[in-house]
Each structure stands twice: as structure tokens, then as C-alpha cells.
Length: 187
Ligand code: SF4
Image (cartoon, rainbow, N blue to C red):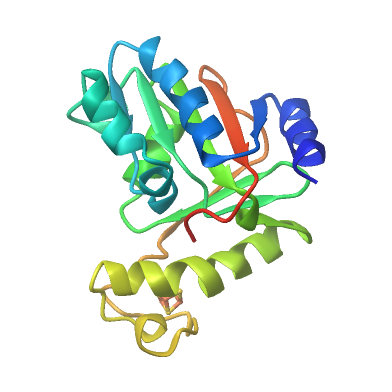
């Protein structure tokens, strides 16, 4: 399944590699960090879980002050369709913005658990079901999903679902790689 999705991503203009373990994924990411002038990352439990933050800190790599100024921008995805489309939902849009323009290179690290069959609708449904409730709780947001675990398509001022980005293809002008990790990482 991961190889099939990796092949679909390549057809859509992304580089794609499959990592069997978190260690392998971290090693691929750190090769990218070593080749970059500066690095930045979007909020991501996946990056935390595979140890990217500690590894970047101990590598001595220069950390960019703003996402869009980074030479290399690291992030995960909230969902990835099995046919290779990346879907991310942001509250501010700053993570999504840096994955579209600014950095020279963008590298996604995505666990197997983020892959959905059923296209964009299934991806958005996954995000609202699996990603938003724990993210709202983690961030202390007062939203219905934080309380009940279910999306109510809320009007809360704390709503984190404000910008939905669907990547049908790699954006023009950015070099981008997806590292697919064979395991459950992030949410
Ligand atoms: S729309 Fe509101 S309730 Fe639904 S997932 Fe987003 S923040 Fe939670």
C-alpha cells in the first residue's frame, strides 16, 4: 500500500520514499537537514514522535525564525489520499502557506495511519474525526470536538478548521519530497 501511494505521489510531481521505521524516516529527514542552509517546521506530532526536533537541535542546523524564510520546511499531513493527494487543514494557514511558497524545499513525513481510501471527502472526514479533536484538546481550544470528540462544523472562535489545502500536484517552484513511514505517527 505504501509503495502504491508513493508511486501515485511521484506521478503528481513529488519525490517519495518509504521508510520502514521511524529511525529510517529520521535518517532521511536529517540528510535533508544537512543539505539545507536553514530549517523550519510546522506544528506536527509526527515530527515530534520520530525525534526530528531533538535531532535538528543537536545537529547545530540553523533554525529559521519564520516558516516561509526557511530553506527547508518540514511538516506532516493531516491526510493523504491513497492516490497521492495531500490534504492539510490549518487555523492560521501559516503551515500551509510555507508548504506552497517561500522555502526552497519542502519535506513531508507522513505515517501510514494518515492514508485514506475514498478521495478528498474521506480525507477531510478523517481530519475532522481523527486529527482535530486531539489537536483542539492539546492546544486548549474550546470547541465542540474537544469536548465530545466529534465535529459539529462549529462557529467557535477557537475553530481550527479554517483553511483547507488540497495538493493535487507539487506546487510549481518548490522541490518537495514525501517520506511515508510504515507505522502510526501523529494524528
Ligand atoms: S469544525 Fe469545529 S468542531 Fe469541527 S473539527 Fe473543526 S474545530 Fe472541531
